[in-house]
Image 1 (spheres, rainbow, N blue to C red):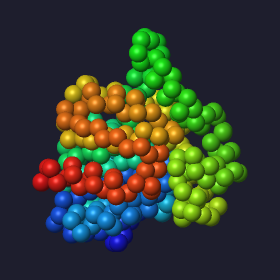
Image 2 (tube, one colour; image 1 turned 90 degrees about the horizontal axis):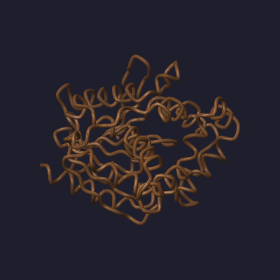
Image 3 (cartoon, rainbow, N blue to C red; image 1 turned 180 degrees about the vertical axis):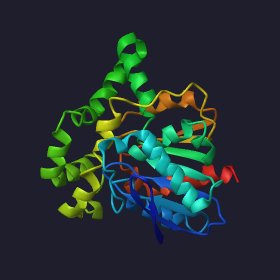
Length: 294
């Protein structure tokens, strides 16, 4: 893997890449509490045919945190993705995007943006809906009732932790004291096998992954980006629905289809960390979508 550091106004981003830059590019976006190494096995598997790119989101892994918590607002993170594409593919370059968890949440906002979205040749989403669209779906389901009320309430129960981390001081207290057991409990709940190396991370490693990045919840969960207009996302998209996801329900992902002009949903009986437990299945879906566009 080749590495580089991208200096941005608020952060220095650690980028890893492999494969021939003359090939189509696939950019992988990780979530919380991960870093780029979540995607390394996928990057290695796809590097013979594609220019594969990953990076540590600001404050995770080897990327530095912004000085202010507001630096975790989604618009700042969209600028990072745009800058990474420019650094690795050139000013007019594009990439196929793949996102998991917060990487997927942020990726939805990227492809929904009329300017940024032009840089995404395709979009593969796992375990993270568009934050504004999901909030609107939950709100309408609860207030208007009908067939959507039960699924909406079920999603609220699945995402209780997003609200908990907005209690003033709670996130900082948790991740500065008992962050390691909380981290391990979250991964275990999300389906990561007991013998996986991520569960053996040291306290210092876990701290680097969580101490700052929990601000993603504080800065965005209660003030999400605007909901896209139905049919406004032009990027060819696929939603990989994980039917046993401990943190999100299939219904909230199905609700995302109305915002896309070209979208397919593929279902898998898997938990939240399917990139760890079902890498081959995910790689096949990525290859299928990318190949259909070249």
